[in-house]
Length: 98
Image 1 (cartoon, rainbow, N blue to C red):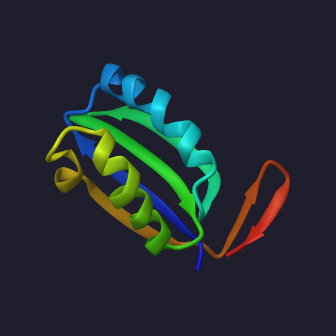
Image 2 (cartoon, rainbow, N blue to C red; image 1 turned 120 degrees about the horizontal axis):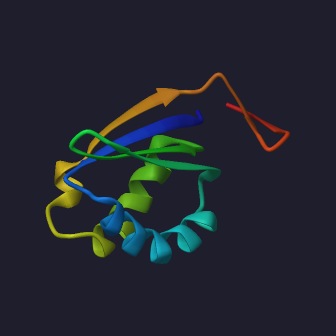
């Protein structure tokens, strides 16, 4: 089932995000299971990232196989992530059924 993933990364700054996203976002676009929504917001205490994925397992593969090697040691273990099952999703005019 498709999921909305929200991850909070404590202590991450806009500079940290800009540096890492330049490398990670091109890889994200072609990663199996990514559905095409990525949003980053600076919030109190860190950075909030929201994405859509085909399922939580593919998201976890992205984190384990790619992200964990690109961000500081310990940052992944500090991430707080929640998954919300999606009933329906529309991206740029295309309906993606959950």
